[in-house]
Image (cartoon, rainbow, N blue to C red; front, side, top):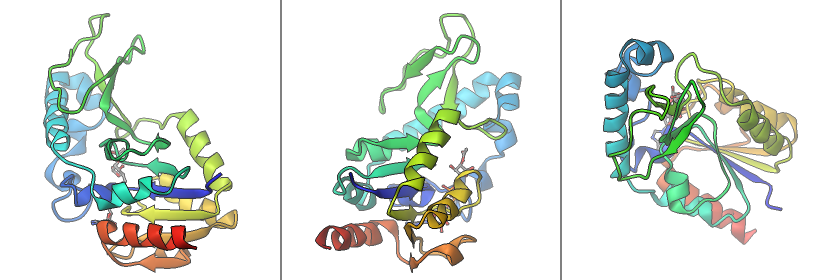
Length: 226
Ligand code: OAD
């Protein structure tokens, strides 16, 4: 079994054209999450929130996986734990992907738990569930809890990994921000790929200050040649 974990954040998709959340040009600089990304906003004005996510789906639907996503697929058997909702790891061909913050390509009904898959590029899905309520995006919004099953699966993989590679995350959002420390405390070799230092950089054994599309292919090649 391959005991490598790729733990990814918005930075790995930045070069595909998906904006990051924090920093210049970030989603939360442009949009107030209280109006677009929390259950209260959806309850107040579902159409406005649905429209916002439709626009995001459309934008992300045009983005393509980059060399970073593609290089990861060469590491067969590795586990990917992602905070991203864009589905680009799966579109690159990765199979084992734990989506901690849900998916832009799924809707769910809060009342009857009905879910709906959305095919990237297909935007004419139903907005109403069979029970008559609005579907909401199956994304972890501000104030939502993460799915217990996903956290347990992620933590189990981290506790048994040998190499933990963090790519393009600021490490600002919990519980994901605690994952590098968990990996380290279980003896994993920890590597960070991020052009900028993060609050968690101090705990990595190696920090690669390059963009994901450059650094990930080089690192994967190095690991496969070992
Ligand atoms: P952030 O936007 O907080 O951080 C993105 C990180 O990517 C930063 O540290 C950048 O320096 C780095 N970065 C930018 N371009 C890069 C590149 N080309 N290659 C590598 N790294 C690059 O995004 P996340 O850490 O993913 O949650 O944010 C975590 C969560 O906060 C998101 O999942 C989202 C948000 O609120 C929800 O929506 C629930």
